[in-house]
Image (cartoon, rainbow, N blue to C red; front, side, top):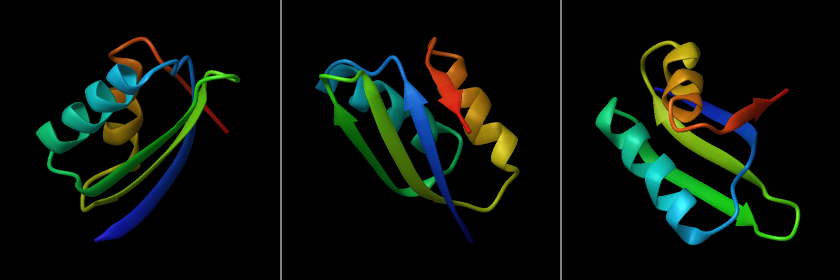
Length: 69
């Protein structure tokens, strides 16, 4: 399983964190860990996922968050 780390924008509360975690678990990601900085509205996502990284990015974008490089 590959470890994927991403930076995301538009995360402003713990509810956002839970939405992202649930979406990633729904596509089969394991060991999902989302951190949130409510002041900057940015967060990081780390997870183990055997599929394509684009699936993870799309699961995050689906909820309206921006994935940063």
